[in-house]
Image 1 (cartoon, rainbow, N blue to C red):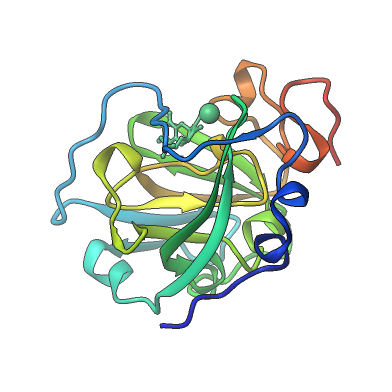
Image 2 (cartoon, rainbow, N blue to C red):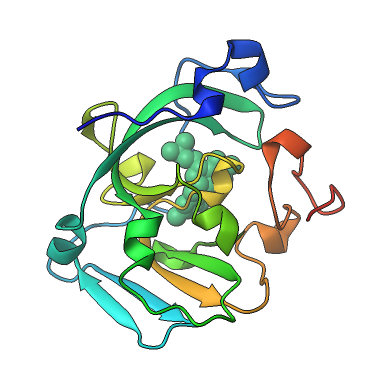
Length: 202
Ligand SMILES: Nc1nc2c(c(=O)[nH]1)N[C@H]1C(S)=C(S)[C@@H](COP(=O)(O)O)O[C@H]1N2
Ligand SMILES: [Mo]
């Protein structure tokens, strides 16, 4: 499977680091609440909201979708960046192809286990480097990093990249997710330093 490289991942290290971020070699684990258990028989992935028909995929159905391999950088709002992550999974474009989106759909709420949510603009969600990953660095994701499935949206701060995802909801209006209700920015562009409420937006 070819690795797809994007412009930012090819640039020199300096211009790859957004403002007020520094590079880490390790990979911190950050989340709220317990690591959920995974049962492939009861796991499902729901596509709902502004779609003509709701879709529910079983674990096998999801894993049978075409896989992509993408290299990208992580930028966490707490200040660390981790470069050159090799992710494997299903691109968001591939998942959205399964649904008939209503033209009113402009935003996405990403739903994860234990009620974690993150909101992103549809345009950001459908970026060509965005995927639902099940592998990192050539190995299965570990449970603490979101196995069996996490979103990877490298263009935004990493809290938007929900671990243990279970569905996506298409929305007309932008609504706050878990951290967005607690002071974090609705948009979260690291290149614009959009960390907290008041840091601007689109
Ligand atoms: N389901 C879920 N996903 C989550 C979180 C969470 O609490 N629950 N935390 C987010 C935050 S704040 C960050 S920084 C990243 C951390 O991912 P990592 O632990 O793999 O580094 O996961 C994001 N995804
Ligand atoms: Mo975070």
